Structure formats: C-alpha cells, structure tokens
Amino acid sequence: MLENSPSPARIVSLCVSKPKSIMYQGHELRTGIFKEPVQGKVVLRRLNLDGDEQADLTVHGGVDKALYVYAAEHYPFWRNELPDTKFEWGAFGENLTTEGLLEGSVCIGDEFQAGTAVIRVTQPRLPCYKLALKIGRSDIIKRFMKSGRSGIYFSVLEEGVLGVDDEIKYLRSDQHKVTVAEVASLFGQRDYDAALVERILNSNLAAQMKGFVSDAFERRR
Image (cartoon, rainbow, N blue to C red; front, side, top):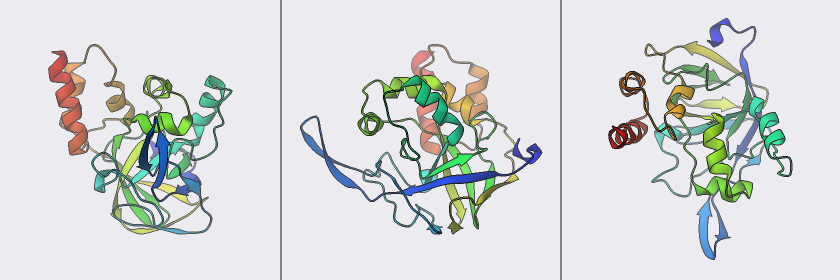
C-alpha cells in the first residue's frame, strides 16, 4: 500500500467542465465529460470541484462519485494501444490525473488527503457511451473495460482546496482490503469467483455499485 511508498502520490493535472450541448447520432445531448485543465487552487466540495458539474445525475456525480481520478501511468498504454488517437490529460473525463494511485494497490474505503481535502475511495468507473463520444471510437468501452485501467471514484469526507503538484497522502486503509481492480475485474467476466463477490459485497463499496455486482452475479449463477 501507499504507506510503504517512497513518496506520496501527486496531482499531475486538474480538469473541470460545465455540461455542454453536443450532437451525437442525430440527437442533442448534454455532457460534462469534456474536461479542461485549470491552473491555481480549486475548492473541492461534497459533490464536485468548483467549476465542474455532471449533466445526468442518475448515473454520474453524487456523493459517491464526487471526484474521478485517472492515473497518468495509464496514458503510455493508451498512446501505444491507439496511436492515431490524441490522449492529453483529461482525455478520459477525469477531474484529476495523478501519479501514484493505481487500481491494483488502492482499496475501496481507503482514505487520502488531497491538498487540504480528505477523500475516500468508493468504486471503479463503469464507462457509458459518452466515453466513446469523447475519445471518438466506438470500441473504446470494450477496450477500457478489458484493460483493467478503470480509474477511481472518490467521495469527499472533508472539503478543501487542491491544485496541480499537490500531494495525495495516504491516511488510512479499509479493513476489507478489496482493491479497485478486483471490483472492476468482475465486469465482463463469464464466471464469477463467489468468494471474491462475497468479499466485495461485504466491503464499503458504493451502494449502487454493490447493486450492479449483486445483480450481475445472480444472472450468471
């Protein structure tokens, strides 16, 4: 875990966006996925960063998805995987691009201090069609899920201020020790590990995501 790391994680880029209206397959829709980088310090509140909003609150945003984080370490993979696609920070609609926070070592319920804010890991991301719209490839959803590079959603325990180059300090771990990668790995599998599913359902995973895990497991039993 990060307490054994030689240095804390850090924020590489900070991006926000208000919802925008765009045309997609002949229909107008609103989306906040087109994040743009900002400089200076930004206030992180219970539901989002100042200057950031989600368009469809039935599937985006809320207390369990107040902040979306994606690892800078994943970008070389995507640039190699899709060399004709331009990948700049914020390409996946993340609020924070970071170094040192990876799905395989960060657990659901782990808590961190980012700038002066305190945040808690809640779930991996399950992308919708708007990621395909953002990247400009219809196959990105399948590629994204298969890659294991889901990114990490956080809730906000204590509001605060953060900015580029701020440290993300590990504070405490969750007792269940269920990694973000373990949760993300369940989706797309034909067979489930019942013991892993039980661990996940007993963890502090966000309630909506627990429902997805439970429903998917029941359908495949």
